Image (cartoon, rainbow, N blue to C red; front, side, top):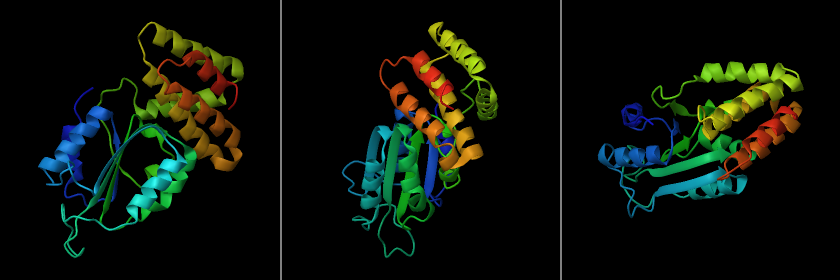
Length: 241
């Protein structure tokens, strides 16, 4: 994976309240280094710097974040003009997945956080996020490290949804065969499922697309296991959208 450090130039003076960063734990470490060196906000021993790592961020995790957000900073690190000299509260949340319920719970918080709070959501793919959540974030993408662009994935996901079940299963077989031959990886499967979720949510919404979104969420949660049955999980999605 290429370094995302150059993309952190977009952080500028941290004027935006919430950032979505496509990356991994390595990206998280680079972000923390940037915050410390460029913005003079230390993570070590700072009670206002929250680092959380989630396999899947759930609604209970979202509630914890909301609770931690509510108190004012204890230090003056990264102080903000007009905030009486108090500093920033930093949330660096790294996740492999996030439930729809958790995203809905964070919506208002990401839209109107306290002036002293800055959120950084580090995710493996932007397609993991609902459009409503994505619109509230300043999205920082990795360099062109992926062979498939976001637009390509959305196009493939849309065709997958519109196809009949037999054709969907053919798509699943092609993808899992490519993974078994090491031409693709588990992350490609996760990215595809996330893109399918985005299309379903955009076209059907949470109510009409409830069953499909539920199946997608179950599959994605298991895809994040150490050794999932990728073919079985993708077939489950194919048969339930």
